[in-house]
Length: 225
Image 1 (tube, rainbow, N blue to C red):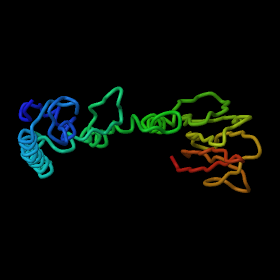
Image 2: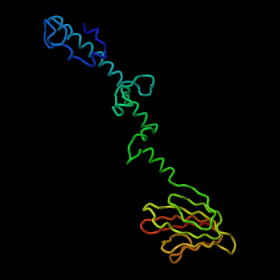
Image 3: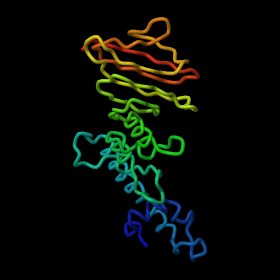
Image 4: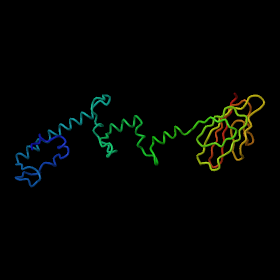
């Protein structure tokens, strides 16, 4: 078979290896019988094929990346990242996934993916309206209690090391403030905290951050209504 009749895929797959290394008069080398002249002619044709492929490679490297209609070299480089599901996955595909956020979907983090973890972070705080007068808070929840006159706060018996929640409430205006009952052992800091105790004042809007780091901690921010 003359070399010009070989397809590009056959040349890419076999290359010079498909040609015998010396003239032969039979098929013992695994190829067709070639005289010295025929063998030389075939090797003489190889530089033309190599030059054509080199010119193509140079054109791809020098292509303007802003011209999306042109094939770029990144479109030809296979990543091998998904051999069973996407064997044609290219470097250009990987670049696109980095830019559009899809990359996070198959980067492993623990037993999940980076996308799962980021989604979990986004949904880490659950906002809940609360109107009862007794509350045992759950981690990751912000309780919006409206105007509170009485509230008894209990603490979970076995909090996680990362326990954190928030209480948001107003106290009544006038002479009467909220009656807030809470267990001992909370280390308070912030507004309207004195001698280690939090005493809400009347007519104020409070945000209380409560967390557990081996001990119960609470930080209070209060502003006048």
